[in-house]
Image 1: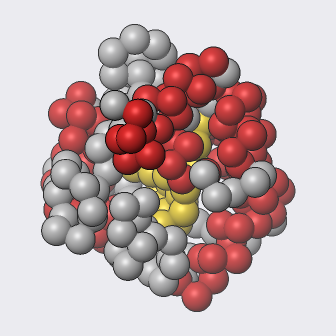
Image 2: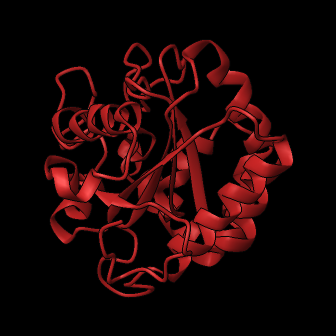
Image 3: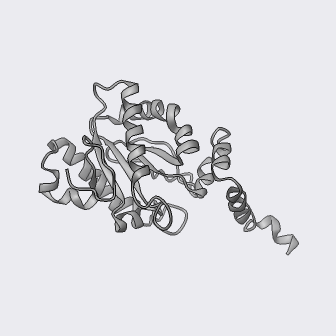
Length: 228
């Protein structure tokens, strides 16, 4: 396992930066299927998520946090298998990665929101991915956001979720199923605006700054034109 100086790593955890996947020595312990899955996701992150897209509906990269995370080397990929694991096992696994990310530097200040862990389920088929991730997120999604300040999102072939600014663009379709774990940010309200379960969780998590964030966005809307 390559050394991860900025993480307090559990002994059995395998974490790889995107650039590690190009070095045979750093992935020697992986099975070929694991290696191929991580490389597919790593390439997709670099080529798709870290770059602008004409159908995104806004300027900037598909994921605004990825370029900084790649530059700062605070994005890690972890290969895992779903076979033979109970629902409780998977929940515990995700909890372990949550704690790992919370311990990663920086824990505050500049760059604190640019770190993430991508848990790649190398044996999970696209057909099973929707129900698999729903089972995980239904149990720990809201508590993780509310209590730990961590957001989680599934990526897999066939994911129907769409971009905020273009309902016809689906940016959550990845070559191999994975679960993204990242810090919660105040702009998450854009994902939760039409979700009656999640919007109050976001508001409680961010408190008064959440109101200011919404107010700033509302001030840009044309309903104010007649008053100016």
